[in-house]
Length: 256
Image 1 (tube, rainbow, N blue to C red):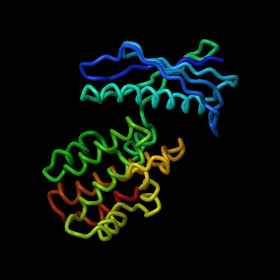
Image 2 (image 1 turned 30 degrees about the vertical axis):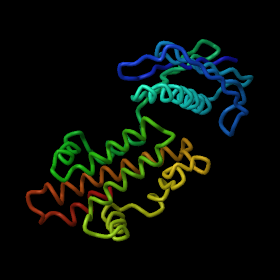
Image 3 (image 1 turned 90 degrees about the horizontal axis):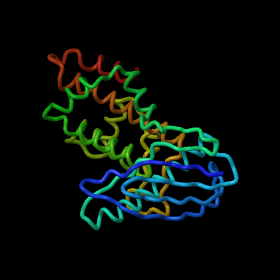
């Protein structure tokens, strides 16, 4: 059986004309053994996976990640020599029966938290446009990079949380900041620790652990909760015309 993955390369003012990599795969918990050949021709990505087993929905998503990672490796090695960057995007797969699956780039668990907390673009922009809103801007930047680079998502999501933690009590030491952050936003130490990966953070990739699909969904939900509750806290403490409403209303908003 042959599965054909397709995508494209995003690179500023550059073109990757012809490169290919062959990767034998022994199989894992959620994907079968087979051979993956990834080619890039004129910035178009093709990943052909040949296997004796039919791919499930989960294993198709996993194989898509393999194709993207291999293509990204090719892109970046070539791009860095030119002093620039490149991103690999894989958008569809053609199954042996001719059916086509389109991949959704929307992180639904993250999106659902903003819907749940009724946080809209205007709420976020009020905070990011404030003189003290740079921490949320930095946190959003980290989340964006984590979404684009799933392999490094754990590190970037943790950095996003750290940016908001520091901003809530900049005059306190780290332990005090974490305590205030957890208490005000109503999150647990275990939730925060689920994003921690010191090996990945320090470049020890042999001992690092990237997200499994269920872990990533939980992490995205948590990051969404943190941002939504932080926005509610910021609006109460920094933007409210009177802080008389502050303590109880902010506390209630952060525990929906």
